[in-house]
Length: 279
Image (cartoon, rainbow, N blue to C red):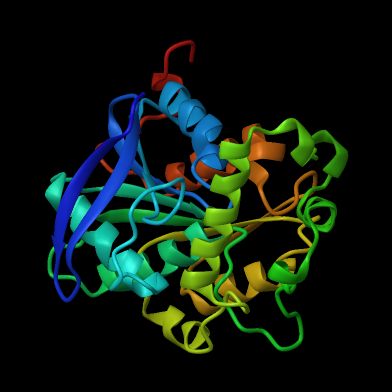
């Protein structure tokens, strides 16, 4: 589906253009991509929309994939404010939120903001291999110092199934990848962490699931357990056959985790597995 761009007026940030795609119809899901860009969640968006009767909205974080990044938009918290505004401009409620990597960090900040909002729009949050925490005993790898091959080796359970030879890519794609890395660095810094985040997580009051790939050597599973331990009532789920991007390596397992979690806090909009086409 082609992307559309909507210009939002965000308190404290002014006008912010946001591009996003929509997949399917039904219960709203906001799906936030990581540093690899929106292509890394596109397949999972289609899977969610077709199997869950969901309207899956996938924004492009401003500055990624050639989109404009306003000068005032420089932090993960500012991105969360943008997406809080997007939910309201689209008049969405009872939204399931899912974010991977830096998208998971944005999701945590958005869950914090919505937990204290007078008109909260989120039903739940799923954090998938999220960056954002500073854990001295298990630091996030120095991503920006890695070669491309090292990134694949550390990010995947089966690196060779996803390894890309840059020589086979068009120049335009190489340029976009470089721009995405620059945007990621701008938002997350070299540590991709906020020392204050862990202490603020107990303020999240919406149901939260933390999913982690056991083979993630970019952000060790200890970060997932720390997220889950800090958020009241949060569940933790480890996927053994995945690394940093479970939606690419183990999409069926991730979908099952999301579905079972949703089933644990049903609302009037949730659908039982038996109510889905094909039972």
